[in-house]
Length: 290
Length: 243
Image (tube, rainbow over all chains, first blue to last red):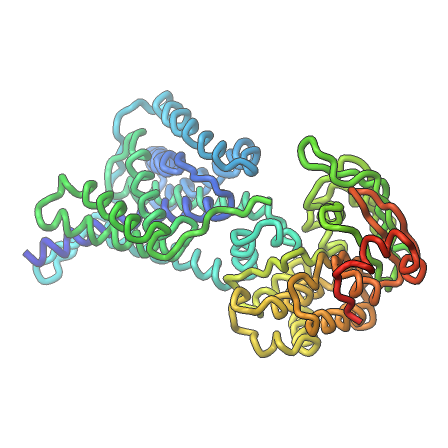
């Protein structure tokens, strides 16, 4: 029983890693702009498709991953400059724009690549046998990359001058501007950072599973659930809630209820929000509008 | 020598006009004040000068450069810094972080660290509370921090919006001494907006009187004090003189 449990736990954590990458992007963008970007799942899906395209074109997985990050970051830049910046004073409009983007991005992808699932050969095929526990190295890779990237993001936000300015802009946009902080540029920067994380998540996801143009929908729902559980706008919260989600999904699958996994995840979210309406770590209420 | 010149500023929110054709000047090393009842449009004028509100007409000229319509971060880089009403301390950040945020526009890391020490000397309470969250400070301490944070930008013009609001008479006296020292210690001119006419009149050399969004009169403080309108609006009222 135990070996299977550990395997399922690793499975749960590797999926939760991708979801955490979405949740971090969603929570950062919400904290600064008040916009809940539901198209973030499509950003992830496009990251997967770009990875697939690059691998098809003959690159290795690592270059494909880098291309996916850059491509989705560029897409985030264009969409922020072209669309979301016009909705900054009315975050609800930004939310609606993101809902529209879901349909547009999905259909653009279907138009070019069709609705069928795409997959790439496993970038790491090795399976380790540790005392009867079979560990797929690709899953460990996904978890480790996510830990490294999330830790880097965390250090940047808590320690650097830019992170300090970002936190100030999240807390009080107008007053941050009075300090000389170019808030608009930070908003663009956070959109690009969140998009880059989605691009990375997409590359990691297609390393684990086949991806369809509709994958973004389920992933963003869980990413949003994780962001909400942790407290919308709270980075630490998103990471811890992502970890909890991974453990719950792993255990529920490990005990033979894999078809109930999604129900457990969302049940947990509802339970957390009933007990702690602001999430486990307390969220921000979005930007103060003067 | 005129440092800041505000010319014919008109502002409003939606259909309502707040300021109409407001002009004022501020010289080097000068302290001036805008007096006026609640809702006269003083805060909106300050927010317009630093770019938080876009003027509908008029211009803001600093040192000969037209800065009208620029965003607050550009204004701060040019040395035009507002200490906002209600202090607006970053509550989740430490006193030390708040101070360093004030210097965001500066690139001289050594100068910034030196200025943190200067501020902790000028406002000893900030040294004692260095690692505490801004939100845990009392109102008076937050006001000290807000002024120090503004000064960290090494502004040429510091705009103070109601620094005495909600403070005890003793603390108001402290604020008075601080404002008087800003010119000598930091070489900044001060534009002060105050409900507390006693405080404003005791630190400023010139004043503007604002009513319903317009400047109704201006002049040296000694002359303003004698005006019938001033007496009617303030000096007979319940405001507490700080001197």
